[in-house]
Length: 261
View: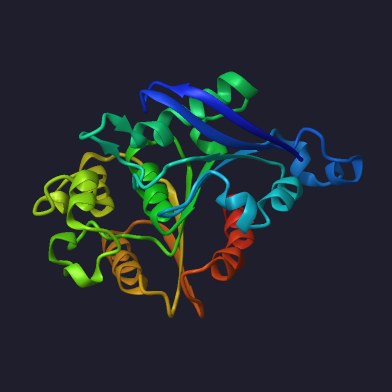
């Protein structure tokens, strides 16, 4: 499994950024003797969580092995603490970066097929939010996987100071006016309602959260919302907390779902 670290200039971020890439171009013959190599590689974009970086999935998960098993080209961008949305205060457009630019860069640089039916986006915590919002908003991903999702935009104005991971200024820098954030395209529920009203297609969605995770409430609420709206999705709750043990238990089943198994 070829591992490539790329530093390149991002137009969306208006500066240099890093991208880690796994390419199944050098796997041994015994690995390619399986049906997943009867097709070009699927593209899987993995988003890290708050305070993480582009190396998190490599160091925390078995993605290198899974990429070889399932013939996946894996793209792991650095989203910093952006929640993968465009930041007006700095001009860094992280939403556009993971929604469009990462895929276009991968197609141009590595010759990958980045049509929606070939692209999957997945993340945990902040990255789960990013995967859901990006998949819903940009239309570039056919499959969306969200793990322990930080679906905090709805009701963020009512979160008390003691329950916040960061301070008020940080949330305002990410989501703008917190009093109206949930009525904008920063809120996945708003995007779903708008897309359904306009007849726009939505990606297939696979969600999971640990039953002891501190984010189980917002994840349950989002599942209920999608069900109410008639949006096709799967939601899995099993014992677990907000850690790699839970996310790793979900990763292979989610990948197999995305591949149609």
